[in-house]
Image (cartoon, rainbow, N blue to C red; front, side):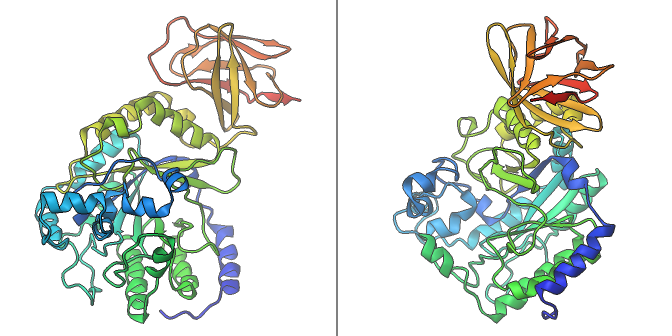
Amino acid sequence: MSSKVDWSYFKKHYEEFNKNFKPSWFHDVKLGVIIHWGPYSVPGWAPPLGELSYIPEVYGWEFWFRFNPYAEWYLNTLRVSGSATAVFHELVYGKDFPYERFAKIFEEESSKWRASDWVELFVKSGVKYVVLTTKHHDGYLLWPSSIKNPRKRDWYSSRDIVGELAKECRASGIKFATYYSSGFDWTFNDTVIMDRNSATKAKEFGDDYREYLKSHWYELIDRYKPDVLWSDIGYPFEDDLPDLFLYYYNTVPEGLVNDRFTKKHYDFITPEYRLIHKISEEKWETVRGIGYSFGYNRAEGPEHSLSYEKLVHLLIDVVSKNGNLLLGLTPRADGSIPEHQVDVILRLGLWLQRYGEAIYGTRPWIQAEGIAIGYEDGVPLRFAKKDDKLYIHLLGKPRTRKLILKPFEGVLKAKSGTVIEMVGEGEVRWRQTSHGIEVEIPRYLYPSPAYVLKVEPIPEVEK
């Protein structure tokens, strides 16, 4: 499996390959979940300080690593002298309790888990793809690999968690992807990450890790045929990637590669706890937890998490700009998911049962945003299209029945034979005005954080 091709060779063959296979499924699915689960789920603690999108910018990266709200980083934060995690660990487990003991507890607790329970929740919640963390930075594997860790004996699950979840997902029509931490593995490089410089040092490896890393990716491809290869923290040996990618695309013709292997080739980008505020020509996937952590954090509650309303509005906004939402759920060691997370994602699923036609399978329109102007207030709008239908999302309940629908640029002009329907409510009265299309919405509306108007055919925009 040594590298025999260069990037120019890869690019040529990828372009030829792409003429025959243009996977649209990733554009259609819109909503996925990412699951971090491992020994770190046993202590399940981190200070719930806030989101990645602003803490390092305000307080600096040294502060972030010392008070890291990502509970899946427990091992690293534990080793940062004076960190809140180190204090928690000594108080709860004792100063001499090694992280490795969590693996045995995880093995016992995870035996209670049933993949079907998760998948039943995913189906009810409208989730269309699942990304499972097969190995996080602590190096622990969620499958009994034939490639053993030469630095840490038995550092893997004897149960094939990856295979069981992949089988259940696919039986329910859900796509399955494998996350693998390529750039950090603390069993091969145990540098304590305290700032950007030490983070760079922690990504330095020898040839033993090169073969281990490469062999694991090939094994994941061969065993599980993942619909997405989801790497993290870069790939330390980029010369090996052309071979790996070509092998993957030939094994899984509709497969996709994220942008966290290398910036030399990827199928979509993955901003973390960040949004893109305009329509992106590049397909993107915003990645975030329901709360501040991707791993289970017993210190987090509803007050640290997305509300139902914010979650619905987030999904709509991302979809309008050519994105997918990849949402982190945080199972405990026994596989149970915190109740407040279950509640909010099930409520999202109910919303999608009613309004899903305006989400799944849609594409961005020529504009993403606008406003519905009433006699008392304005309601923010988001747009998406499918076939010859324009879906207009109202991010809130209007206080007046008559609204003029306005994109931020230009005026909507209805075509001949236009029908406007409020999804779930039926047709609505409308008229063309010089300011745009005016609609009269029903007096009584189903309680919802967002409503959808469907305009068919898609109207023109006059500047």
